[in-house]
Length: 365
Image (cartoon, rainbow, N blue to C red; front, side, top):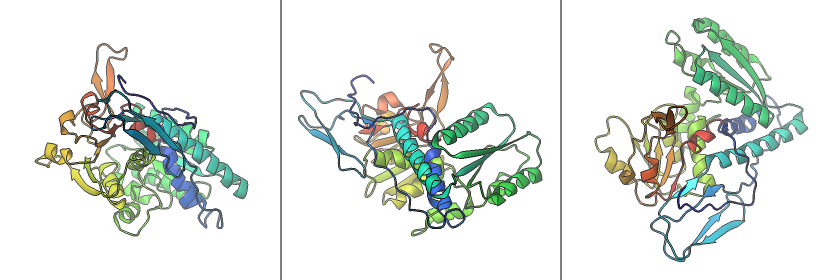
């Protein structure tokens, strides 16, 4: 990472390419396994203190001799480093893989506690329709993450030409199964199936994707708590909070307004007292709006859409995008990039997620 200086905590991290479903299943443990349907009087959810796995380098605003102190979230330990002789140009790198490893360890410990108290473990059912290679890979990753965390996994694979009623019957079966605490229907679905009808059929108490209208509605209302929140937006918040980046009182811009990432990300930031603006395809002054942000969440699905000069000096940048661009120098013939021009943005931002290894790493954990 060029001139970036790496500061690591004393807590060991286990890096893995599978990482944000564990956050989702944390909700499963807290909101479902510990509910009256499974445990009744189980102990409340407790999250282990986590060392902050962030690679730090001073941005261009840092003064000579400044001391960087990152207080560990829910931990009294402080990691300090002094900057001497030089001010580094590159931003802090938020290591999503390391954060994901910590999350997985925490959830595995919680699952063990639940098993010791109740004799039961959380169960996740994943329904896959068709043979899309990317979907198959993603489902395998989820099942692997479940196994690592001690979560029981169930699965149903259906052919591309399955009828809507047949798919609904599978969902209803898992809704009624007391050993299944979370249901995930892998998207996208074939065009002949009404996606909205399928997602609405999933019990909101088992809707680990957070797409059910009730869960989305609760997320949008002050004072209400959804059973589940979409995993990628939840991962964005985990990255910010575990990197000790303040959210309350800050200006945040979310680029993209999808139900899967953009909208819930904006609501989560607003619920943490950020002033939020959502940029979309009809926004006339995107560059101007982005440049005002203390926090940028890019989730538009366009390779390197956000330019370095758009970034406010010292801003935190969470890049959700994963895009393949042609690169003859690579063995695969392509390389993965985010929605942000990383090389340019890291010279301006205060903290930034790399791609790969940033926001995507939290999507499965």
